[in-house]
Length: 249
Image 1 (spheres, rainbow, N blue to C red):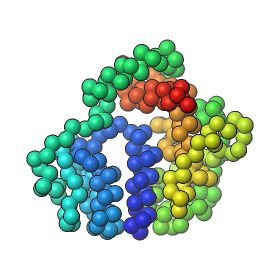
Image 2 (tube, rainbow, N blue to C red):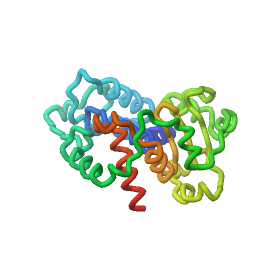
Image 3 (cartoon, rainbow, N blue to C red):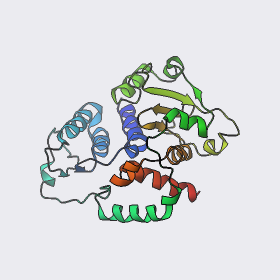
């Protein structure tokens, strides 16, 4: 149970967290705290500590340094009360992030694909890759019941038959060749994504893939809206960074 729970947290850190704006009020982040708590105190106590940390990470607290203590507790580590920490990824508030945003905009603004409304996630995927849709049974048979329960608990597979989430795999075709050259296995034991690398949530786009090149191409191809530019949104930040990575490949 401890190993599986740690895999789930690492999965979140690698594939989900980067797709959402930084919002944690503590250092280390809640996911890093939970991972260390489980490793140090075991699945049960560490899981409770990680859950408690997430609950107290809310708009009504100031946040700050809160490291995992050597003893079990659901409260903030008192040894860190007077410690100070300046987050590195306050985007777009952080001055360094704003400076980088300006640099990226100056470099790639003319190449941005801008539309009044973002096109369909599925339509964008069909434009850039050959995709094969999977049904719930094809996905379920790849995981144990315990693994599925955990994946459902953290909203990776909230409902395998829900319309909001769609599951695909990429066959080995000429069109997919650039993406299949760069595949990251999340975990050698679980091999999550090695055969089924694509989870799509229509509202936000790709929810999970183990192919960075595909994710970057998707972001750039789908583009941004005028509102993204006006607000210097996090979505714009992701697209600009994807453009830079694709150019440097």
